[in-house]
Image 1 (tube, rainbow, N blue to C red):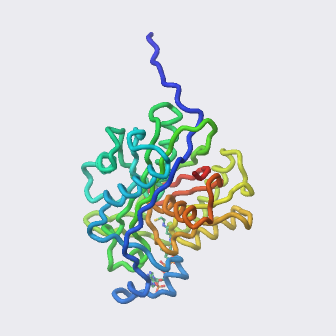
Image 2 (image 1 turned 60 degrees about the vertical axis):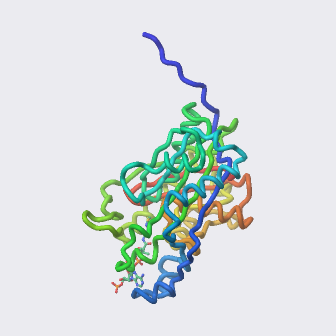
Image 3 (image 1 turned 90 degrees about the vertical axis):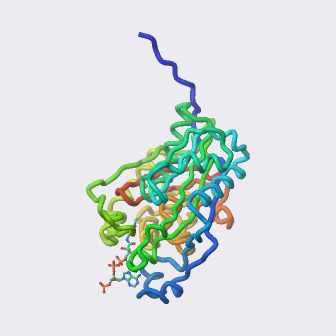
Amino acid sequence: MTSIQLPPGAPGARILGLGAYRPRRRVTNDELAQTMDTNDVWVQSRVGIAERRWASEDETLVEMSVAAGGKAIASSGLDAADIDLVLLATTSPPEAIPGLAPRVAHQIGIPRPGAFDINAGCAGWCYAVSAAADAIRAGSARNALVIGGERLTDYTNLDDRATAVIFADGAGAAVVGPSDVPRIGPVVWGSDGDLHEAIAVPPGEKGMSMAGQAVYRWATTKLTDTLVEAMRRAGVGPDDIDVFAPHQANLRIIELMAKRLKLPERTVIARDIVRSGNTSAASVPLALSALLESGEAKSGDLALLLGYGAGLTFAGQVVVLP
Ligand SMILES: CC(C)(COP(=O)(O)OP(=O)(O)OC[C@H]1O[C@@H](n2cnc3c(N)ncnc32)[C@H](O)[C@@H]1OP(=O)(O)O)[C@@H](O)C(=O)NCCC(=O)NCCS
């Protein structure tokens, strides 16, 4: 039988550059308290959010994704024409058809890439980074643009204070390219579909609902093992981790995970939730961009990532920062 040839692929993959877009409008807890029964003390102490960004009308999901993607390409040192795969992780597209990735790629000026959306809840960007790295190692792509973009306010019910204070908008992106040595570790991903109703837009409704306590319990009991396994598979331990950047869903969950992992004092912990709220698939790249911009993290740092959310889905991996 004729054998099918495979391209050689790359020995490893790495993140070449990151980019972020944060909507202009800051919304404080005090502002929300003017229109709903909530207060700054509750939100800060239960979730850890001081303010979040909400997109204005002109800040569409496409525009935010284009802005973040363009910045990631600029910081990678590549040209748009070098990209041949575009993955857009999102849970909040304005419509189901068509997917947004081809349009985002076109607006950035990337000529005819493979392009598709990924809906893996708040874990979407971590799923997509891994899919891109594997495509590059397998020779299916040379360089990939991996965007996490959300306009969750389109799916927020302002009458539901439990979710309205949490969810927010924004986009973060990375360019993933080939590397002689692996700089993106093996992913540990999975799902608990029996809990699919825990975070959902119920049939016939426009706004998202969340079984907060059930998700909290799941996140704090099931996901530390994922992080430990991601480190084990990458051949590193807690003492090697310079940056811990989990999904920005709740500051208490972030602190608890860091404690359980016994990360050293020097490890920088991403707390972007304080200023950005929960931006779902955008939260990890937004958090990484903020740490690099502020100088708290630096190029070459070893970062432990974790995405988790609607599905329920989860994905963790160790990466080297660009
Ligand atoms: C959502 C979450 C912050 C809620 O915090 P919580 O401590 O579990 O709060 P509860 O839902 O038990 O509510 C406690 C009380 O606060 C009230 N409350 C809820 N939202 C409030 C708000 N925005 N302001 C003031 N009070 C609020 C509730 O009505 C409830 O009041 P009651 O005791 O009188 O009934 C928390 O459960 C959480 O972070 N869960 C995980 C979310 C997550 O990880 N998602 C994954 C990815 S998206």
